[in-house]
Length: 250
Image (cartoon, rainbow, N blue to C red; front, side, top):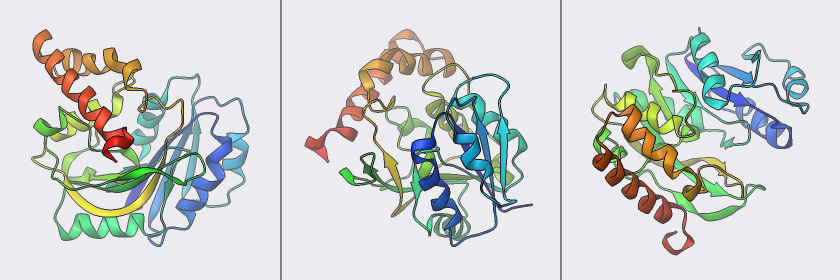
């Protein structure tokens, strides 16, 4: 049984996949399993993964395309590691990411932790300032803005259980973190930059105006808030999202 389970959905990711694979294979911490679920890619993503001769990499393929949340859930169901972390097929970890995060989780007795990450263009060159992990995360402050990014966060499944993603909402990661933080008091920040996030021009998370409705449903349908309360938190999320990605504030 590996100490860390890495969860990755893959869909037509061949352009960046080899770089992502190298970033995992180069980790200084080696006690991991990597569960990759391909969501019916039409490119050669599966062929790239199958070429890697490493028994720690476990590839699954969905029966039909179901979206990133569905692919993550299939991997989560098979995960055996104590610590759960996520890496999309186009993102990148520095070699010390797992080592630093696991040590921090143990030293801080943390159930959930997150780190800084660099916000880069498609060539992993800095685009705006790093996102800084500078405050403890709670259920209440996560309602107004999602400070937790999948590629730079880790939680202890032995203590809090596995938290699965809702399917059918483009904001499934925010819902998952909120549900997790209903069970624990706080997520702790590690202010070191150990990951790189590609900010694609077509990125769902970058185009805030396109997912306002999805975010509203996070509060109304998943958190069961009233219409007025849901609109209040959606407005806060939109404002904070603009500040998070605008070059004016970074």
